[in-house]
Every structure is written in structure tokens, then in C-alpha cells.
Image 1 (tube, one colour):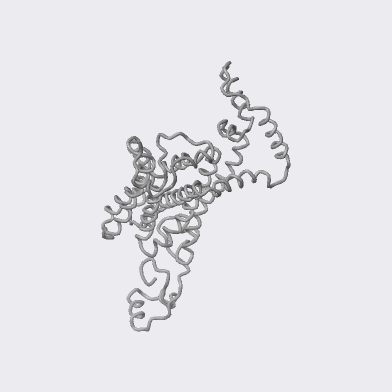
Image 2 (cartoon, rainbow, N blue to C red):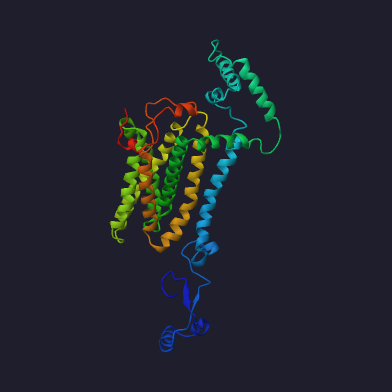
Length: 367
């Protein structure tokens, strides 16, 4: 090639050059004008893998990202299908059923009473009027039309997006979850761009993963959900953006700073689900959490392309994109109301009577 790892070669007659000695070939190329440049069609690899098996280099390099994306896509589709299958076997939450006026809540509670041989009533049965209404709903649900199971989901989403307050909360959670997942996977896949030993990098990332779940515990004890998330976002952003100031040759320093950013992002990843679940009422909580998780998979789908395609332009681009993204997420999280030590709301009406998304929340502290 023209240079190491080049995708182009000079169009010499390589069969003729192969018949010469090294000195003769060197002399031949020095006295003749250089021919036109053409693309490489064969490559030599060190070791075996998916890249060498399918030649995922040069013009085919985007396919390398597609292979990694297929893994994330499988998780996305698997979570969607597995959730629908699980609903067939797992009982609904009695708390949620009661909030919907469904008498199945009484049946589920009765089953627990039978198992534990309890003689005391835990809840009162729903009144006859509610039972009659539920029977009518069940009769309608018997209709076997294919779109019937989707109607409750569409109704819940329309409820979430139909109220300004819920919509603001949901969009912030969507963005925060998406960039957290994107940054998490970008930093996991970015060993080559940091020119680090990939084995040490992966081993360290695994150790950091354990610490990331322990790190938030003392912070949550003294601060609220919002402050903890914002602090972790800001710390991660500072670490990832500070990589720009480190000379490219200082591999160890870049690696340590990147691992600290990875630590903070991992801690955020473990907290964002808790924060999301506490921001929404019981009637819509599962929908909010599940759709946020869907957006997390969108972030993981984008990660391989950011690492492979943008990282090929400049080694610092992936970490810089993540640093800017989590910085914005930190500011957005500060707009959310604090949920620490607050009772969970059961209905949308209760949510609308609580603290709202506001710039004033940035200056408030948890009680």
C-alpha cells in the first residue's frame, strides 16, 4: 500500500516485480514514473476474527459497525418480544390493577392469602359497579381483532404525551437514557481509538463496572436523585472533554481519564431507571420506563458507528461527542422535580399537584 494500513496501492505490474530481486525491483520503481493509484482488493491480517473473515476494512469498514449494531438490535427486539411473552405468565401488579378499577387485583391478593394461609382481608373487594364495568371491558377485550392488544399501549402513550408536565418529564428521561446508553457503549468499544491494550482495557472496564454500582450509594444518602444524577453527568463530561487537552502520545493518561468517565456513566446507567420510575404515576409507570429503555437501545445502536466511522476521522471524536451529550443531560436532569422521600403518585391527577419541571429546580435542594 501507499502507507501502513492504506486502502490504496500503486498500479505496478506486481507479477513482473515478483520475478526480480529486491534490489532490482527497488531500482525499477525508482527509475520509472509512478503509475496510477487503485484500491486494494486483498489484505494481510494479524490474527483471525470477524474482520479478517469478511474483510471488514477500507470500503467495507461500515459493515464492521453493522455487525456490532446487529447485537444491539437483537437485544432491542428480544426485550420487546420477551416482554410480551412474559406478560402471559406474570401477574399484574395489584396496585396498578386497583388504580385501573380492575377486580383482578382482588383475585391476585386472594391467591397470596391462600399461599400464606392468612385469614385477614388485605383489601376490600371492588364495589359491584366497578365489577360490572370491568365485565363490560372484558367482553370487549374478547374481540379477537389483531390490533386490540395495542389499544391499551396507544392509550397510555397518548396519556403521557397528552399532558405537558408528563411530556416534559418523559422527553428529558428519553434523552438522558439514550445518551447514557450511547456513552456507555462508546467507551466500551473505544479501546482501539485510545491506542490502549484491548485486553487490559476490557479487564479494567469490567472492574470499573462493579465500582459504578457502589459509587452512587453514599451520594444518594446525602443528596437527592436529581443532584446525584447531575453530579455524575458533570463529572463524566469533565473527564471525557478533558481528553482533548491530553497529548495523543500519553496513552496511559488518556486511558485513566476515559475509565473515570466510564465509571461515572456506568453509575448514571444504574440510577436513571430509578429516577424515571419515580417521576411517573402508577398508571403509566411501566410505559414510561419501558419506552425509556427502548431509547437506551437506540443509543447503543448508534455507538458502533460513532466509534468506527467517526473515530477513523480523529481518535478523540467519539469521547468528545459523549462528553458534550452527557453535559447537556446533566443540565436537563436538574430541571426535574426531586423524588427523594416523596410518596409515589398513583394517578396523573396526583402528579399534576406535585412539583413541576422548572428552571427553579436547579437551585433547590432535597429535604
